[in-house]
Image (cartoon, rainbow, N blue to C red; front, side):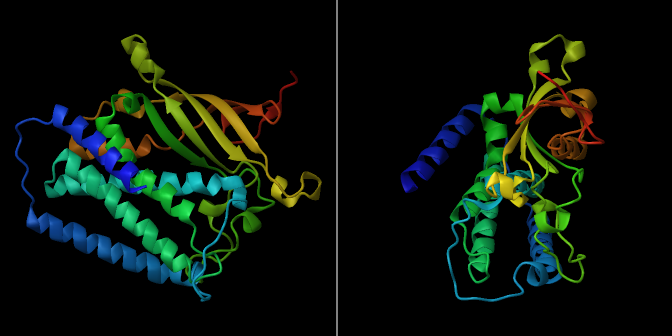
Length: 300
């Protein structure tokens, strides 16, 4: 594992050495203090308002948890996506502080890795247990921004997410009744994996290979899980659902010039916007504007 980590860092280091210029970067200590204080405040607030009551209200002896059956592992993609978004936010913050492009993405990944490990460590003292793969998925997501910045092929792909509560029957069960008194306590949407409510996507920017007028066009492949977990006839296993859909590249549509605008579009480009969608498995179903509204079965 250590050799693999060193190899990854070496790869990014070589990639960076080929693209770096003569710009000298200097850390702004005032901005660094602002970012450090903001991170500390945010983490403390999230813990006191949300996690302490919702996730960690019950304390047990430290334990590891094999959660490979949970939500058919769709939760691992959720951890990865969370790492992607926060990895970008940390990268933007460290850029603002004055770090070099390589240093900001590296420290963003490290920050997410430490955060994930600490969260799972605390989970280890709860009924949920320490999940190694949850920590790995979140950490990999944290390094996503580094890949986007230094691996040319990743400029053609965006990782996206969409949530829409089309299936309300299992909302409270799917959300696992998490949430404290200040967050409703009737289920948490980020854990509402079932019934096709939550889906993850890879959006391929094929428009970059097309004429300029079509450079906004993308083609997306998505996946989620159905509500089979709650049906005895399916052996309590949820099946994966797969989708194909046209998509939009917001960077090509808006072409932002200012740093704040580029950062905003970068985050928004990780949200799958409504579009005509075809579910190709386990049965064909067409959605005129997924995820909004309902679809209809396609016989073929």
